[in-house]
Image (cartoon, rainbow, N blue to C red):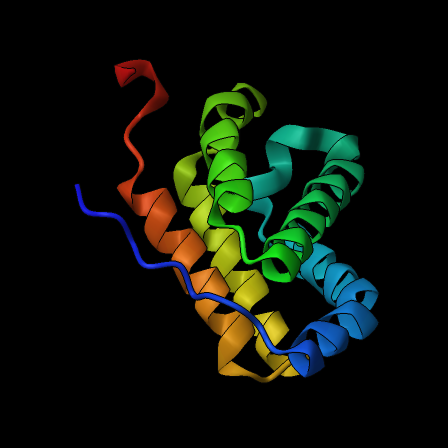
Length: 135
């Protein structure tokens, strides 16, 4: 299995735009995810809180990875997600769907190839990572 090239450094202008719009991105992503009831119904009345918490953490790790140009931060989170989140009824397909949805929202608020490349990388890594049970 070959290593997927990391998008690399992000410009200070793009990073600043991301930071300014991060809360709006989070709000829109949560709103959009909650509409996809087949992916969130298992969370019951905790769905909004759990989705917000997960997306907030994802955006924080994404920001750190972009700031430090460090792929291990994101890859470690993706590996953890594949181990932990199935216990909450969240599948790899749900994660990919949510990242693709968040990528679309991100394009609206921070319309640059730089951030877009990070989301493509995250989805590619998720698709490439083996099942945790195989380890």
